[in-house]
Image (cartoon, rainbow, N blue to C red; front, side, top):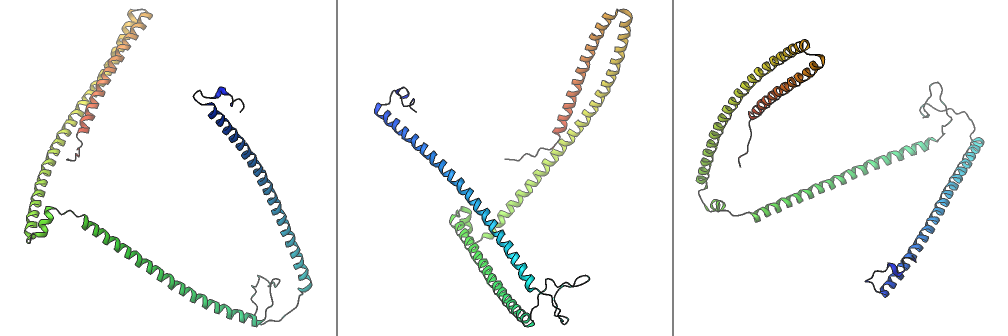
Length: 313
């Protein structure tokens, strides 16, 4: 920072007093940032120390809980060993509620309870059950009333929105000439009958125009189908001619190769074979291009036969 405080880094248009104040402010800022960084590091260290102590405290609590649990288990075992003695009792059928085993019933976990306690418990269970049923009925009626009130509230809100919409529509309705006539004329039925007759005439005229256009489109479609069949026939003739030309090309090539083999040396024969093959390849390419052009024309004519649904503006 000492290097940055020199006058070398000072802008030329900046005054010395302002530069000195700027340097002091920057030094204070750097010092503050260093202090903040130091305090942050100190806080981080304290948090780490606190976290470590909390973990140690949790571990110690867990150990203490486990120790107390083991101590209680030991006390229970001691008390059971001192007081849980085996005695033989004769009980009537129906007073034993222990689930019977497959071969013999085990009473290790059974408890001996007085009959009056069971009867009191059963009466309490019945009383609590009746109270619970009554509370459930009250709760059901309460929620039923709440849902009914919510439904009525929503209905009233929808009615209010409907009325507001109708009021807005009435307020924003434009009183046109036709509406004025409808409001002020007494004999509206005659005017409506005239409008209906006009609309019927318009519908009939549109239907006639539609039928005429459909007939025109069908006629054009038939014409295009005839053109497609004609072009397909021409393509078949061209394909046959192409096959014949290919056969004649192969025959001429074989004849030429036989003649060249008899008249010229091997080197000249190879050169002439290359030239003849090149010409034949060019001829085949030109003929294949012509066939491709004819097929593209047939495809174009076929695509033109599809009806175009143009929407009238």
